[in-house]
Image (cartoon, rainbow, N blue to C red; front, side, top):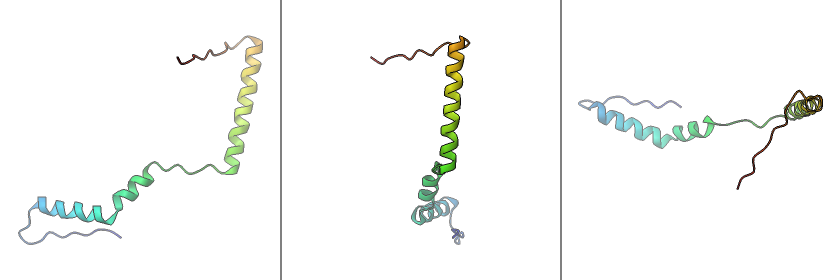
Length: 80
């Protein structure tokens, strides 16, 4: 439902803007927009399986390259 505000007779732009902001605040439009802004849908079963398979293939490829000496193993730093 769109919000419609009409300028009253002899009303300043500032007061019109203030009325509009108040209506938007009360309607909850901003709250809904902020909530859905960063929404990331949960992956489907098929997507989960595909990413798991991709990880396995990449892991095996890295292991193969390590054994052949074409890839230097990563060293992870410990936190102190």
